[in-house]
Image 1: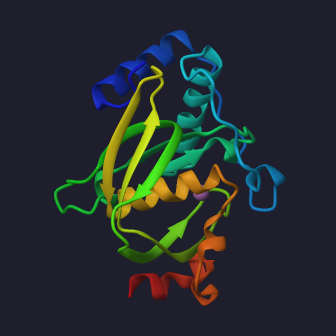
Image 2: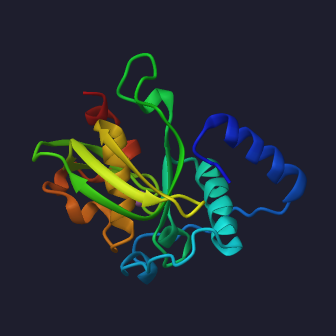
Length: 198
Ligand code: NI
């Protein structure tokens, strides 16, 4: 099943609507739940129906939230599975360049490229309504298995790199406040609008 191209995604959506009308929106664990603090287990067989079903439900849950990424521990499943996308409006390029179609990462591994870091606000579906400033590597290389069980590798920068680092942290029991240098930048988004706009 190819979830990595947009046309593939449309066909998948049609397939789901016709064949799997009972996909589920899963309950999202919030900060404090033990499942978010644990190291997730590697997936043995990315091609198994159980993993495909989990991914379908995670994608549905992510779009419903809505969010740009979701890791399996956030839906109470302690496995190394991440789904994410970078929509045009959130990409670093003005004309949507840098947007990334829906991507599934199984057993992902991240490697920084260089030591450059940048600081920006992040939110998380497990901390609804909150944001905080987090430093992340600006450039990374990441590798993972796809749903077909085949390995792939990508380089990422900016927001794309940030999303992947944030989501993969979930697989090691790390939430973004644990990465924050200055808790003064942590709070409820409604009350921090002024600073966010600056
Ligand atoms: Ni998160």
